[in-house]
Image 1: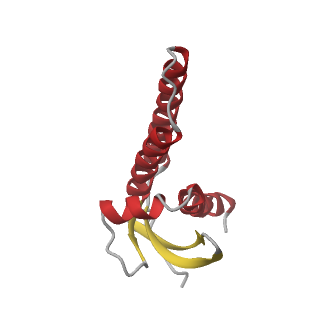
Image 2: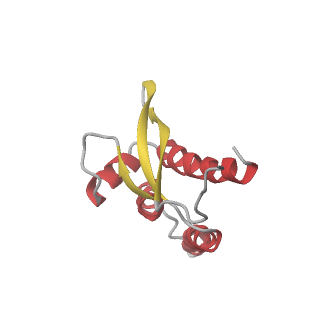
Length: 133
């Protein structure tokens, strides 16, 4: 008899992420991600896009008024967005450090490529699912 499968996915999945390390080799860390359907995923990605666009508009307006952002101000805004991105899709990780807001900010503050690695791994899981693995 053929094995039966459920249409509904489990609420989470695990994927390995190569976390970049400054001055060293990336480390492979297991991340536990939330499963989202296509509508939920679109909503999350739309919110990220909207927040990024608002940052750019705010920076543009400040520049036009002669009060351009400092790099430090830009980094603070970008880190806040990246913390949100991680919290929107990740529910756990394989670091010794507890998965909490403080440690998420600490992680994404190390380098911009860290958040890219986390979100790319998430996107890759959905791409593979779309392609049929």
